[in-house]
Each structure stands twice: as C-alpha cells, then as structure tokens.
Image (cartoon, rainbow, N blue to C red; front, side):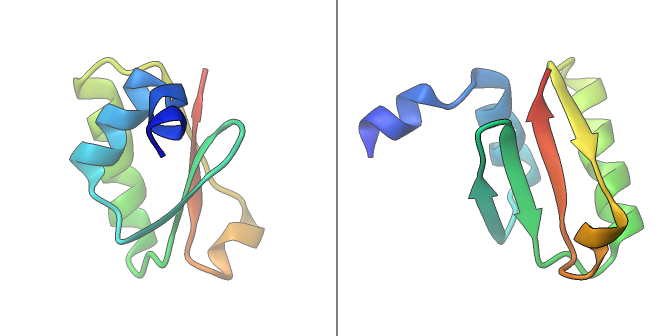
Length: 76
C-alpha cells in the first residue's frame, strides 16, 4: 500500500484530501469520483479546489459518467 500511495501525484493527493469523496477509484490518468448525487454542485466544488490551490489537474465529465454519478480528475 505504501508503494501505491508513493506513486500518487502530489496534486492529486491534495485534491482527494480536500474534496473528501465517499467513493473513488484510482485510474492511470488520475481519479474517478463516483456516487455523486448533486453533479453540478460537486463539479463546481472540484473546479474551485483545483483553481484555488493551483493544482495541475483537470476535471472531465461525460454523459456516460452521469449514469453512475461520476466524473474524473486527471493529472495534466
């Protein structure tokens, strides 16, 4: 587990700590947040965290992700 945590990008780790998602899955490109009910509010909150902390991350959301209440935050 320590090796896995050491490989997580510092900006991505900061985002996960600040956003504090209930359910998320690590991907090669970043993290996929799941189980979101209020999608607009959470997407806005994620973008605000990234902007305010000047993190090198991008929020990605597609129509397919809406079906399971999810979006991705990827490392640039």
